Structures are given as C-alpha cells and as structure tokens.
Length: 242
Image 1: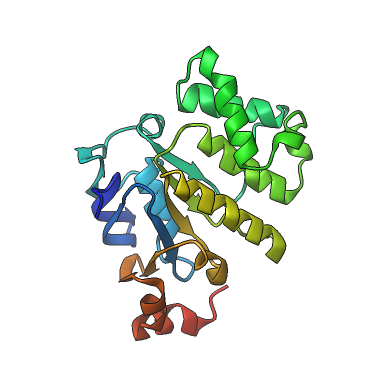
Image 2: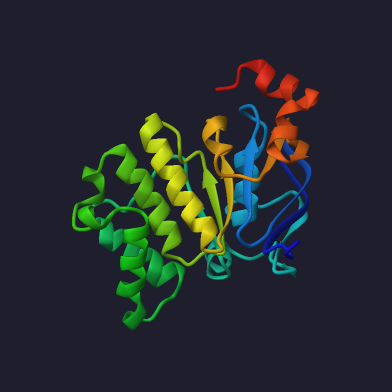
C-alpha cells in the first residue's frame, strides 16, 4: 500500500458544546479513490474542511507526506498538493472560464507565465470546457459550472482532490459524464476523496468507502462490505438518506 499523501489523526471539532467531529482517523494515498457517505450532520464536510485547512480542528493533527501541517494555511496546503471542489460552484464573477482556470494555475500552483496557458489548456480539455473557454463563468449552466469548479481545482496541480457533493443537481447522464472525468483523474495518479449522496454514482468510481455518523467513522473498507454492514444500514441507508 502506498504511503498516504494526506492524513488526519484524531481529528475532533467542537462548536461550543456541540461536537461535530470526534476523533476521526483518515488517510488517502496517490491514485486512491475514496468515497465518504453518511447522513446529514455526520461531519463529512467538516472533515474535508479540516484536511483542506479551512477549518481548524479542536484536537488532532493533519499530515501531508508525513509532515505535520495542522497549522498550515489553506493556500499553502494547496501548494503542497491538496485541492478542493465545493458542492456549490464558486466561480469568479465577471471572468471567463479560461480566466477562472488561469487564477488557479497562477496562484494555486504558482506556475510561471510560460507554463500557465499549457496547464490551462490541459485542464480545459480534461474537463470538457474548451468550447466554453471564452464565456463568462456566470453564464454557464449547472453542469458546466460544476466542471469549472473541478477545473479550477485541477489547475492548482493537486495530488489529492477533495470533492464535496459535486454530483448534486445533475441529471443521470451528466453524472455519468462526471464519473468518466473523475476516473481519468485517478488514472493520472490523483487521489480522490468524494463525498456524495448519490451512492450508485459513487460506487462506479471508488474502491474504498467510508461511512460516518455523528462525527465518527462507523465503517471503512470495500464498498460492498461497508454497505452490507448492519451499523451502516441502520445509521444511513435505513434512515432514507437523500
């Protein structure tokens, strides 16, 4: 098994008296495909926020390549290979698709001017955005906005990409196209951690499934085995999660 690129140990997050994450251990290696499921309020997005650096843990440590980066800012973790795409796309308004991707390559990856456009072309082709490269980001439909959110993260050159429900709101056909793209990223050696409520889509990509409930990991392993786990069925599938 490859050494983890990104890992969390004993991750805990409290908001006053409310504990939303409770001693979670998590790791992901290169070209890994990890899915995270669980009911709303399970702590999934909080976990991604701590790993990415946008949320400060109350306890526990985060490591990149074995180095403790718990106190490292989000942009510095990005430079070390941790990218993130959000559930709700957040493009820079008033800018074209290409300009949005350029920002990721220039500031997220710190690429020189001579490499910027080559990286952006690669990313636009991979995400199927070449035809809309010169359109304003705010004029895009949902599928293209989702792809742009992914493209901006890819432009930073991540070794691990954290995806937070990027399949939400898509049609079945659009979700299938997204699966193809994510599989291509994994084939390129990028580790993917994907939170998703559309489980049948997730299962087409991941080879490891983590189920969370009440801030804890209640199952972690081969997807089929996790989904047969009685605790998982009770906590997640048995509650009619959306």
